[in-house]
Length: 127
Image (cartoon, rainbow, N blue to C red):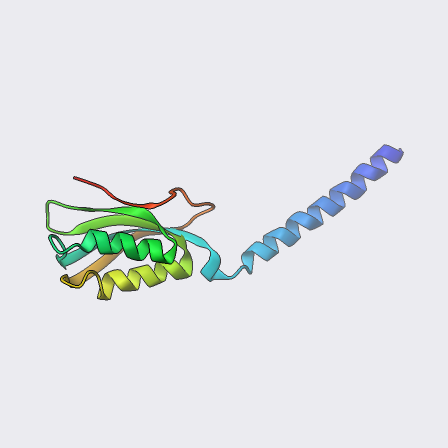
């Protein structure tokens, strides 16, 4: 009987703890939530060191991912990290790029919240 009472108390306390942790997670600062997103940048983005500057900016922001040239004269990639930093990177891809680039547009697809980061660094891939 004593064991049953102890187990019932543990069950109540563990249920409260799980509920509290779920509530805490729900109200966590959204800027700290890890996210990942695919991107494609259009315009004069090949032959102008766009990938190298993209890698440098991602490292500066503490993001991981990759980018590569396409056969359609665009640059595609994936970036992941804290939501606020990913938003900064998206803005940089839309408006800044490398000094010699001329960005027409940047598209972002498949943005999702991540439980944990999947990559350790930001790399430049070859076709």
